[in-house]
Length: 260
Image (cartoon, rainbow, N blue to C red):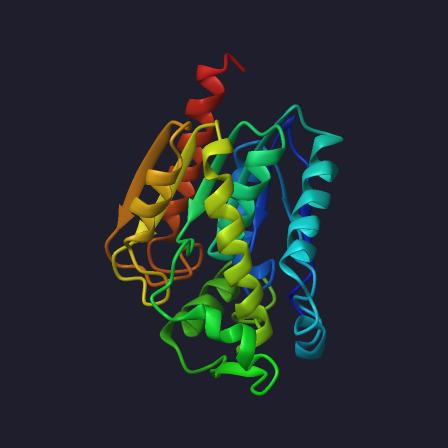
């Protein structure tokens, strides 16, 4: 898919691994990565397995495939960087937490991630065999896509709009449900500073997930930021610059505490 390519921006020896969400692509994390790179940091946005290719490919993946994509990105940055911060939007934030529980990272930024959704996701384990598509939308029917196209033009980037499947497969939802359970179990193993950024206007991930994740991070110092106007794609929506500034300030604070 055009615009779904990974992005690697080489800077100093502090790296930011930026992970996109379910059915999306590196496009939704590109502006955050570019912002961090302008501050001198290295940044890598991997394309998670099964994304940015075809819906048929996406239906065959497992959550561990997404995690291995994130882990590959971690090791790519580790070859160049002494300190790594993992940042993830939605499902990408769950992968970031899972990675922080198992690998050596300096900090985590979680953006609107669904530890628990109100919908009965367990049904997807059965529906995946009889109804492959759970939700369909048009790439051009939202104000957000129009905003993204306008900003892409202003930034001199290819005007792709959101690069996503715009069809949520039930197989993907079933794997997200499995990933949620895995992350719930591993939250106590996260021991590094964590920034949680959620919006009260998120129509996809209920705001209560901020408190749920914070409650599970019993061994990690946690900071929170609440947005008042953004919907789910925090890195592209109207408060995205607030998100970028908060992530930047968090990284610099943690590095200062670690005497880097």
